[in-house]
Image 1 (tube, rainbow, N blue to C red):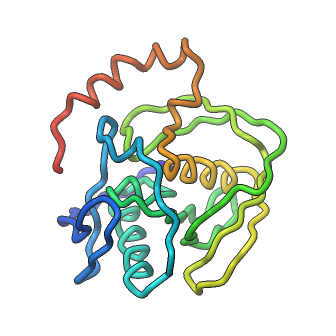
Image 2 (image 1 turned 90 degrees about the horizontal axis):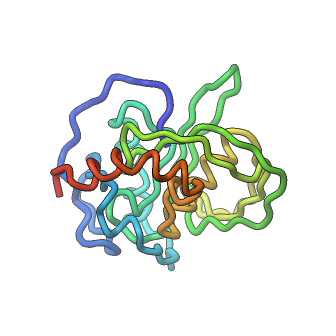
Length: 199
């Protein structure tokens, strides 16, 4: 999910081999996948064991997020890896400071309420829309210290968690829109799908 604009940095090629295998040799930013890439529509697989390679991959995801210049969350599927890993780095918003979070095998335990807010996506650049989501959620997962944690979230944190977990299930924020809103974005989405991007 994008946020405020930051100065982007050059992004090097990825060391991720294939869609569900993590083979890392050095810590470099990864290649983002964009709308139209089939991997974005696939369901990610649970992480069987959080190895040092998985933790290094999470670090690369943080570097990739920072390199975008305007992101606050990223799912492994967005860099072509079908593993249930998300990272969130919201920073400071409205005097509230959010700690960076890497979460393995996140699962939504409960959701309540309803709220509409604008969303965008790093994999669907320059497209935003108002999306209805639960207002409060409880999510369980494993953090970078290999500890099982439970997060009670609302507001922006809840929205980012829901957005990134959707990615792990092959769901994009535009899928949450009504037919009319989706049709209004159809030209922009078609241009993105036809755009030539690095593979």
